Each structure stands twice: as C-alpha cells, then as structure tokens.
Length: 112
Image (tube, rainbow, N blue to C red; front, side):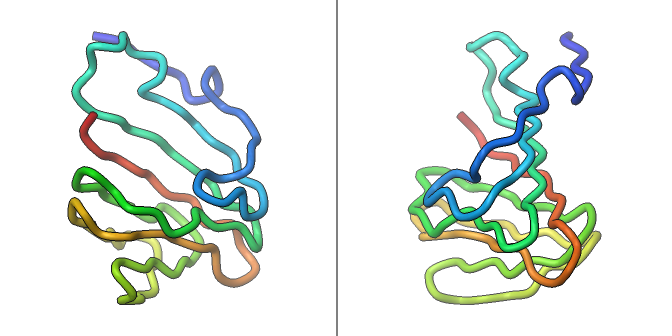
C-alpha cells in the first residue's frame, strides 16, 4: 500500500494535449511504483482551460467534483456537472474544457 497526500503531488501546469490555459494537477499515481496498473489523477482546469482533443489507447473516465465542463468524444459533446462521469472508450478522440465562472475540478482515471 502507498498512501499519498495530494498536497505532496500538486503542481500548476498547462493542461495536456494542447496546453490550453492553466491547471492544477494532482498526479496521485505518480507517487506509486512504476509497476502500477492504473493512473489516478485529479486535475483542476482553471477558467478558460481545456484538455485538448486527443486519441486514447485505453478506456478512460472523467469524474467531475465541482464546476462545469464540456466533454467531447468522437465529435459527440455533453455537459458535465458535479457528480457526473464520462466513460470514454479506447480509440475515441476525447477532450474536456471548463465552462462558466468556476474552475472545473475532476478526477481522471485509466489503465496503464
């Protein structure tokens, strides 16, 4: 077992896949030995920020903790709010952007 404090893995950086705006990343699974089978991360997209559209080679989940976002998967768009998740399939081109006047706080998880 590894116990991780999110403050220990917090860093401000542009979001992946296009560096659109800024975000706060909590790279939780980076603190686990490399033989891990999954990634588990929290990312807060600041106002106007987005994880740009990109193809995924695995299933992936975006789960919203707070704020609002617009997720896209192969051109299909949906709005996500707190308590909602988007399950995204391997092979899709996906992305998510922050909406409104509150940062979008989400969990991103996928297998290695």
